[in-house]
Length: 203
Length: 203
DNA sequence: GTCTATAGCCAGATAGAC
DNA sequence: GTCTATCTGGCTATAGAC
Image 1 (cartoon, rainbow over the protein chains, first blue to last red):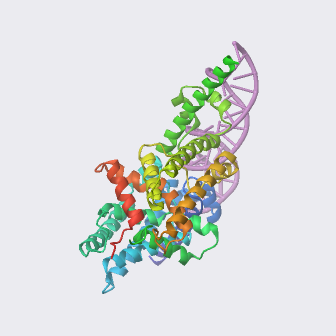
Image 2: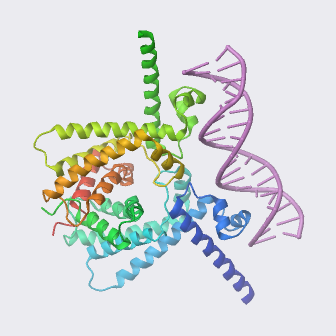
Image 3: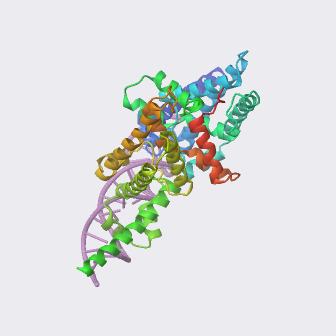
């Protein structure tokens, strides 16, 4: 019993290492430019061994996404437990957190349009349930913020939701970071200001 | 003389047809998923003939980008000639225009991260000069708007510039359009409202 | 310049020994 | 489950006839 459990633990650790590497490579290169050979090489195992753990390249990406979603859901649950936070503050905290993940090189960069990957993700139950779960949690915050008059009434709830998801993988972050003139925190605050405050002056 | 000119005209027309097709396919599929075979098939010529006009797949994408930039520069010049427009209105008109292009399926969707394509574009003089030209034109508007107090003082000029470029290929547009519940103009107005007015209420 | 046919390459996935 | 070696398919790009 203990022996089997130990073996499983080792396997789990190896899979964690694989997903770590996939996460980093997806962030650096994106899905297309990331090759399975590179993943195997960086993990330090043979490609065939990789395929014993994950059935396909798409499955690797899905595993990385699932882990990011799990971490995000954990963050949301943590914030929900906080007392006295306005819904708008929760949404801002969420946006700040995802931007930090991205600037840290831990946000998988998936292509907006890729039929095979999109199909695989849609068919992945683990990914889909987490994505829906997160959407519902955020939807609750958005509705609360709307009810409190904290959100721009000219912007519907689903536009707010999609915008938050889009900011999590906004290429503007990478551009500003590549410029090299600013710190990560500066970049995050500016994008927060533009996302929630808008580009235009308050009138 | 007349004969040669006519030939050149025919060639030009064919290249225009090629770039049209490339533009549409880039918009629908993105750079990676678009194959040169598909381009040739849709244009109705052999792949080898395509390579007589354009040296590589990257050159095809560059040509599509150059044409979009030319159209954008023409639009900017048109607006600059208008009297009595505030700089902020110019920037909004610009954003509205690029969003319309994208929703019309005429905005090439290039990957944010792709070494070979990025290198090819950077090396393409026609592309780079137009990109810089456009950046300068927009920079002038941005500075004027800042001087007039029309822009959010918490957002630096280059963040504004990058944000405008990013909105031109914002995946949120495609998501909302795919939802099917809204008209193109609704989508554009909401994204304009969120981009310039922000997600948060005006306080 | 246009075509058919093919070279050359790369990456995802698998076979089979250990 | 791990490895080495290989298969397979698809894609960019070109050769060579007309």
